[in-house]
Amino acid sequence: MYIDVPAGIMQDTFFSNDRPQYMNYGAIGTLIGQEINRYLAEITKTNNGTDKDFWTTATEMESNYLKKGMCLMEQFYNYTNVEIILKDDNIYNAIDSLFVNNGGLKEAYYAYNAWAKQHDVEPRLPGLQDYTPQQMIWMSAVNAQCFKLVNRYFNSSFIAEYHLIKQGQIISPLLNLNDFSNDFRCPLGSTMNPAEKCRIF
Image (cartoon, rainbow, N blue to C red; front, side, top):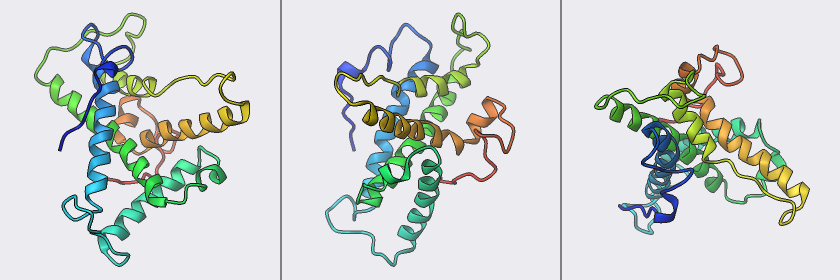
C-alpha cells in the first residue's frame, strides 16, 4: 500500500514547518487519514484487493457496513438537502465518503496525541491562547476544508447547494467523536454532542 502526497499540497493551509504540529496534524494529517480509510474501504469489498467480489448481499459484514453507513447517511441528511444527495445512484460511494471523513479525523487526532506524548507541550497561537492543542487540531482540520466558490464560475443556486453539502461533510463526522465533544465540553444532548451517535469503529 502507498499513498501519493503531491508536493504542492505540503504548504500553506495543509503543512508548514513554521507552525505548531497540532495544525499540521489537523490539516494534512486528516487528509492522509482519509486516504488511508479510502484505501481500506476499497479493499474490504474485494478479495485481497483483486477484482473478485468479496461481499455478497447475504454476508454479515456487508449488512453491518450498510447499517453503520445508513446511520451516517441519516445524520448527514440532517445538514443537507436529501433530494440533492440521493441523485447519486451508488449508495456505496456515498457511504464510503462518510466513513472516510469520520476515520480521517479520528486518526489524525490520535496520531497527534501519540506524537505529543514524546515531545514538549507546544505553544499556543497568538490571539488563540484560550484554545488547547487538542481543540486546535479540530479547528485546523475544519479550516483546511474551507474555500469559497465565486459567482463568476458557478450560479448562486449551485453555490448554495454545494455549501449545504460541505457543511454536512464537515459537521457530521464531529458529532460522532467523543474526543471532540470532550475537548470542547459540549453538554450531552447538545447540537454537537448528540446522545445518539453513529458508532463506526
